[in-house]
View (tube, rainbow, N blue to C red):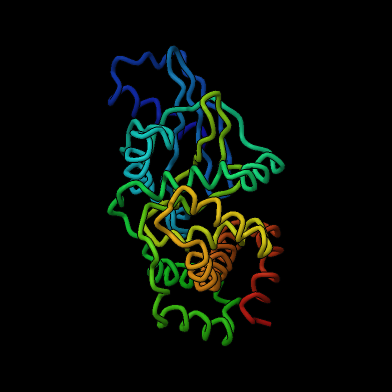
Length: 286
């Protein structure tokens, strides 16, 4: 019933806002991800992707209206798929032909400078006007996690991050904030980042900290990546950028820890619990 309702909603939405499009031959294909289920819409002369705004998506930090705004900015310069519509809780964007990078391909792009080049282009775009509201996100995560899993030690940690001053930003810019292999699309024209649902404005060192943690990069690999990035941003010091990244790492660890806590409460899937012990150790939690 849920799938039928989604298809019906999307068909009515397209008929209303795209009256020239023939919906009779529409084909809907579900596209599942970590944080949401989207729909690929195929029809005469169209290939689109429809992404819903859900309550539980907002609980983890996604915002389709913000995503639409960022996509409109980045799509205009070829850095992201172009958005077509944000209405009635649905974001519709163009479907870009290509394939998702494998883990090995992503590692190669991380090592050979291609990913650093993409990020440098993103980070040199004007700010979107959608700042990363980190403390509000922490507060939302705390409220949405399983209350039985709140310990005194976790409460102290939560209060620490809510009260401590942020690291001084090195450079404020649009950030993607979800860079991994499954969000890297390989096309005939090159490589493109997709899934901008967490994107917002923030310190570029925060983005780097996310990438380093997600890919378990050791210090030499981190320094190599930053040196490559710096070649595209000659006004920055790679060493200074590294120091700022190190300052952001605990904030990244806490954000990811609480994201997994919320996702476990939402889904009860053990894969989210399995990710927690390493993060807890990193933050000094028993």
